[in-house]
Image (cartoon, rainbow, N blue to C red; front, side):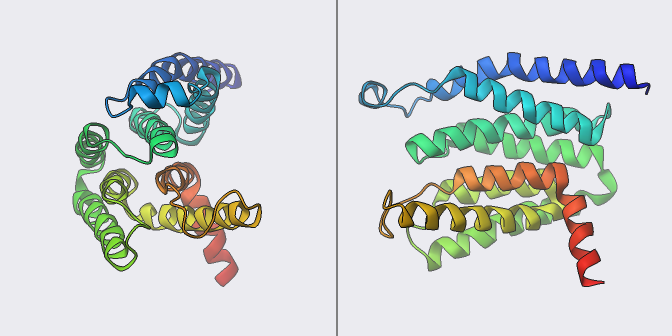
Length: 221
């Protein structure tokens, strides 16, 4: 593609993300589990934040994948992760009606795009969920059922890159947790939602997992 075409499509991806961000913000604010008392006691989610994050994510996805069939799946993955991250951060829940259908759609799309490696996405989805399920048994309160179900979605779309997503999620979670504890904003006994870190790690692994793996292997070599 010519530079002009790339620039036009990049702008289109950004604008599309802005427009979709309006719908995502509305979806986040209207989660059925969100109680009226919560709406009154907490400020509403800023529309601009969701729009900006979605727009940047969609732009980066286009720059990473280009105009190929995997791009719509990447956009879908990013949009779902944004919704889950904000909901879990505010309410500490990951709604089944969002994550479970997303996992099914993500797995079906991944297999359709790469049928020769269908088993990779299936094993990654089950393996990632099983990993967090075991952690939930070992570390009660540290992981929830929602995190386990989110791992299904992660593996279904990311395949082997779910390993990088998990590594990044635990890294970000540990760093932010230490900062919050050091700043006396949280204590070690306070529950901290893990969904946002899983979402962030997943999006970074989707966009830059191959590059990060190459850099890591280069350091080993």
